[in-house]
Image (cartoon, rainbow, N blue to C red; front, side, top):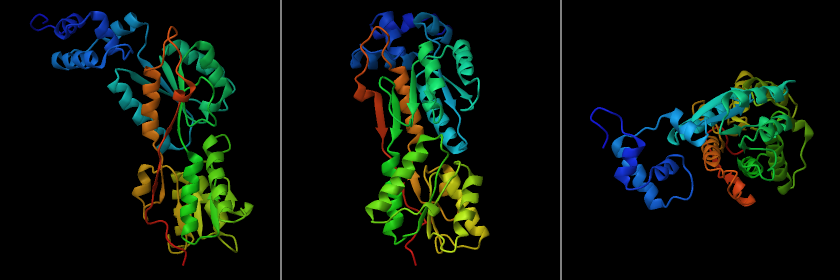
Length: 345
C-alpha cells in the first residue's frame, strides 16, 4: 500500500491486483486484449483503493488527450441537450472529458474552423450531429487530420466511418399509420429543414404509410418547417386556414408539434377533439404540455453514449479495422401514444 497520507499510485494497484503496471494501464485506458476476469480484478482494486490516475500522466503515457469533441449545428435545443447529456455522462464514466462546439453548417470558413479546433484540442475523437455529420468540409478536415469520428444519424452510412442512428423512415411510418388507423384521411406533414437528413427520411416514412393505405399524397398537406417552434406554428396556421383543413398533423419533431398546439389554441380548435397532433423525439416538453403529445421516442442520449463508446473502443492504427457491419449501429425507437391524438369524430 502507499505511504500513510499519500494518494495510491498505479504501482499500488498493480501490486494489490497481482498484475503488471502495463496491464493496469491497459484496463484504465479501455484497451482490448485483457481477460475479463483480470479486468474485473483490476477495477475492483482501483475502486477499493480509490485510485484516480492523473489526467496529464495518462495523456503523456498513451499519447492521448482524453478529450472527445461534440460538434453540432441544430436549431432544436432539446435534441442537442439530449446528445450532450448522454455523451457527457458516458465520457465521465470512461475517464474522458467532452468538449462541445457549435459550428454554422454554412460558414464560409467551416473547414478552417475545424482545422483550428483539432490543432488546439487534439481530441481523441469527434462526435458529429446532423447536419454537420453529412458536411463534406467537416468530414474532409477530420479525415485529413487523422481524427476518429462517429456520425449520429447521418444521411447515409459511409464505408469505414462509424455511425449510430435510429430507423427514421420506419418510425415515421409508424406514427403516420397510427393517425390513419384512427380514421384520419387528411393527414398533414410539417417537414424539417432541407439540410437535415432526418427531414427527408421522415417524409419518406409519411409517404410510405399513405400509399400503403391507398392514399395519394396531397402536396398542399405537406408544409416546410425548420425544426423550430415558430416554424411549426407558422406552418400550422397555413395548413389550418385551408377550406378543407387536415384533421391530423404529423410534425416531424416535437418543437414544431408544440407550435401546432399553440396555433390550434389560437384558432379555437380543440386538440384532439378537432385536430390530432403528433410529433417526433419525445423531448421533455412533450409529456408536460396539455394535451401531452403523441410522439416517437428517439433514443438520442443512448445514441450519444454509443458514439462515445465506439470512439473509446476504436482500433488503433496497428490493429485490424472492425468489420463494416459493426461500424453502423441502429438503436430501437418507441411509439408513445398520449392524449394529443384520438379517433376522428
